[in-house]
Image (cartoon, rainbow, N blue to C red):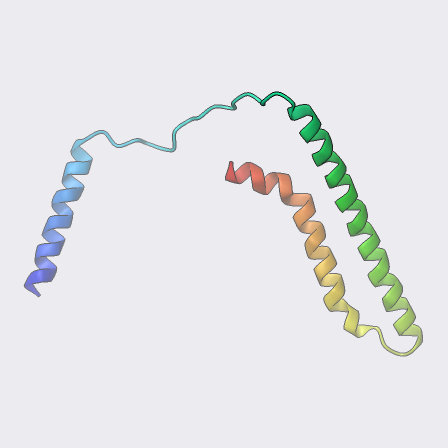
Length: 105
């Protein structure tokens, strides 16, 4: 019990020292920065990748819908909800990619 009280006392002294000093109020502002030379080509490639992935997401939805329609005509079709969930999850990631990166940077 005495070691617990000693640890609490030491922690309160450390907090008092921190409060007396100047503590930064938030993360440092590093600014927007400047793009390196040749960044235009990289942005063009990223736009192509984004367009291609978006087209693949649409094709994935069409593919799952086609499989569901074929299996429905055979009396099935309920098993494809898992596949549709994966495709829609990928669509959500593609749509929110820039927002996620913006929040992390």
